Image 1 (tube, rainbow, N blue to C red):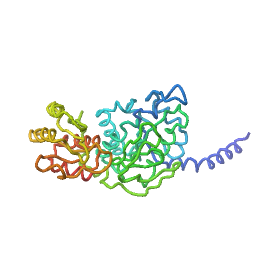
Image 2: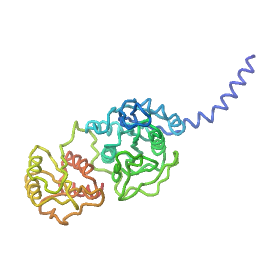
Image 3: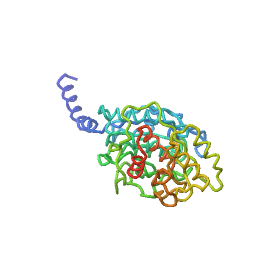
Image 4: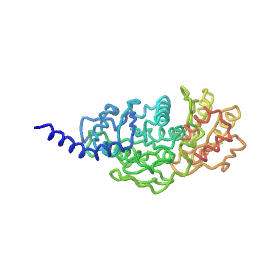
Length: 355
């Protein structure tokens, strides 16, 4: 083959590849931060329920969905590799710090976090309060390991990357993508122990849906967005103030509540019955704890609906705060961050209504 023909063929090949190279260059940069969970799990049987979570590294999780490379430039990082029942504050702080760093340095257009489903909603809400940028942050996971029949992890990851890459995902706070639905971090809850359609927001419904990567938003979050939060930490602490949750029930022993109040915690979320109501005996304990300086938030064990201020309980009299529609576990997160900022009770109460 003469040199002229070789040059001609090379030039033709470059011309053919140019549109592909241009398209690849225009794809958004999406960073996948992996934390483990069922989406990184595997079982011995495709039809059995037994499996081990958090066995696959992020590279393997990404490689299982090669179609991701058609919609984004993907890079993975392993933040931790745990079952999400083992999620800790130190991992939350590490995630928030890394996401803020990626956005501050312009290293990512969006972030996807793969996560176990047990505490996914808590991590999402923590990041919703601590990520200081309006770029998309999307959490996803799976209810079935990749070894199972009809495993849901691959499609959830593909859809999550599509949402993180979508321009209309900006300025909506942290999002959760599961089972083709897009949810706000504040409202989403895990509502089923084993079904792939485990997540829902009964108060507000999903923000939208994603169908094989096609993203459609029908509404916006009803609360303020991530980057507007006054709780973003900036310089991250090594830990956060200890806040406990007590679940109310008929006949609860007030001495148990008193013991926890005196255990050295800085805040308490009491998940009361009905409209966040404690018994008369527990009310007496909580009132004294509040007077002694403990920050007490009334939440509810009821899955849906707000806890209203000064309804059956005179919150102003006792110095209590109400959680609005936040679940007890999310109310705990906001309180930890507010106490870390040393905010007064009046300001903390405002945050519950706004975030």
